Image (cartoon, rainbow, N blue to C red; front, side):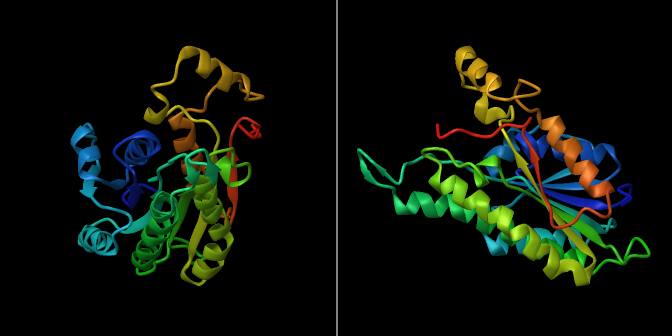
Length: 253
């Protein structure tokens, strides 16, 4: 699918995977709307062809307002990328007692419901565009799961459940949106070097890198962005979750 002159949404677009992906799409000639919270946007550097919009992915009205703004633009929306997410650790039962239910619900709300929210309202706008090819393709949604969807570790109950939901949503969403010419795929990253990893010690980093079969290092945000570009460009990949993990299979801890 041609990217030049089209529009894209990237949630979590002010930092980490989202920021790198927004920049990569903009460099391909897309008008990118980067959704993020106010504090994230304040710290984000300006990027050509990237417009930051204050959006809470758990707030339906906030997303609706952003979609109305995007609909007024001259570039048709073709691409929706969901990168926003959180990971709050907690065991189902620990020395402190049972897992806090509000904490569990918050992770589900951001990672799974937030993804569904933006995908749904984004698809509504993409479906209004003219097809770009003889197959009737109008656009693509790419969501972000995690290898935790398949091998959730100790303390990852909420995170694994949320990302497992994103993975399971993929094929159903692809089938639901097929009649509108919209593909849906998901990326499941392994251990990727993002700002959340910045506080780790050199020793812990070496341990993580040694756990990855090949290449024996952390993944890079630009590799995630490259995979997104590949999925956009390959018109026959649909309803699929792609692992990006260097053949990593997570142990229990």
